[in-house]
Image (tube, rainbow, N blue to C red; front, side, top):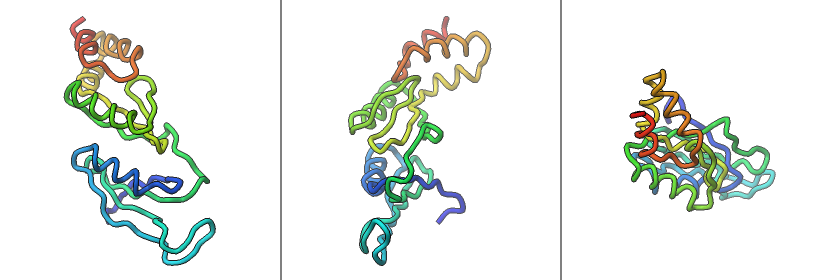
Length: 157
């Protein structure tokens, strides 16, 4: 196990979530699935406790902890995309699998985990600062899924 792993709390669907992420994102995979060796409060022997997985090369551990805690926007994965096709593919996979849209390139998957699907053209524009960043930012603020062509137009002025 890596020295640093992101642990994500799920009610009971960590394995389903990990399999979904591995099917959508490159350099993503599902590793070991650990099951309860005995009964425990709220669960039985054999139920999935944790799932080791990677999302775009980032090591994660899905923990089936029950309903005690839920996901929030305080944590999100930010996925950099190279073009509109890639942006659409990830956004549509998440939203189309029971997720929901939000603003400014954010969406949530059906397990409540937040994702930022962020075209590089937007982050590059923000890094330029000044008027270019302001135009790109103002354009982004009107969007749900990021429209690459509109960001490019804003960058050009």
